[in-house]
Length: 532
Image 1 (cartoon, helix red, strand yellow):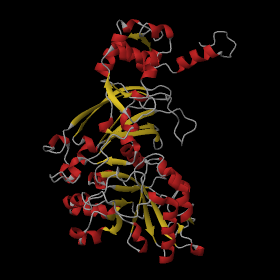
Image 2 (image 1 turned 90 degrees about the horizontal axis):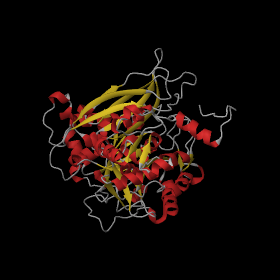
Image 3 (image 1 turned 90 degrees about the vertical axis):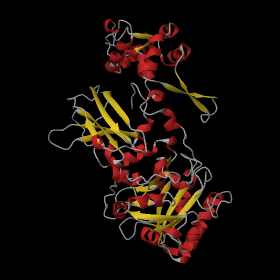
Image 4 (image 1 turned 60 degrees about the vertical axis):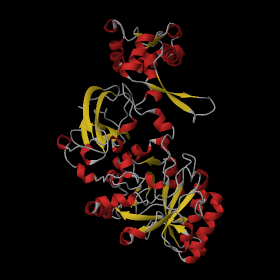
């Protein structure tokens, strides 16, 4: 159709025509027909929206808000503006409509609408992913912190190398708390390795020097170096020397004088700073705000523990403590920063589900970043918010100033019999899966055309954990069309993550996952939106 000359070679204009035909969206055409006068009589080539029709669409279907920057030089100074005027719509047409004649006549074609529904019009409110918008002046105990377990590993827990590049990978993914397992090395030089496994060690100094330039590339807020220290006194002194020499004044070595000593300082107070979390050995002189202590020791003397104590909970230990005394566990997380880490039996680097730990206010749920599994997708979804800075403010009922006794185990019942919720206003989430486009084959499959279907699941307090799926579309990864609507009643929106998984249906073997996207429910935009 695009090859007008029949020479089987496309000119630049013919290629543009070919591209438009290839990317033509039948789903968007159906949407435009609903808002355009006599839309059912117009073809995909001729249909267009005028200013008033587009304004009505953006106001009533999309409830659209856009970001307005105060200057071209800075993206930090911005405001959110609702689309209410014809002049605003004309600016959008000028930006997204490629046909000059339509642009001058204040009309938007199907191709223009395709461009319009991207970036600022995506599934997630763009200011939530691009900007740090939450209050960052509260104590560190009021935040969830993006945390990595055994950060130095690239693969499983028993073989491979201890690799400095693994730290950069975690930091670039928004991680703010990384783990370094330290042992005595030859010639008085500390090394990093994974216990007495086959994992090859590397020098502690090489890791610190390697990550130093990248500590604050993705976020200005503090990095926590969690040192699992197995070194002799002499090599602990060497570690301290390296940290001070390489990190300089970014390393926090004394209490902030401007801070109330009864609570931890805020992320804002600690911008561009590095904190050390360590068990109190000789190196403990550097811990300042994060003294790593076993939870049992903390529990025995909790009334005398300070905000600087940071209990360490194994996965199964957390399960036990949360069931035995849930109210007390949440109470303690309001005072001190807790860390939970995966069970030692997870030699394959699999991850525990972090949702329940977050429900109890655990600040640092350490996960194996080297395993891009379904569980890691929840962590990506949690921390994509607030500009991806690695710190997420907890709901009020999980922080210190809230007096009601919140217990996640009180909300195990099905929503139909759930008692009155005094902590949040419940919301009804209605999602229509309209279509897909250009879905790739899964990594495990190289020959078959996908038979895609979408699973929509919600993750949070137990009563909000639900899942629904579309039918599969046979042999169509190019432009599958579902048009299926799902409804979820969510009782704790602030704790709820929504995940979209696309699978390739297979009648004989396990369905392969093609793609996923996860985000907090509170960051979702309304209207016809898309996710690339």
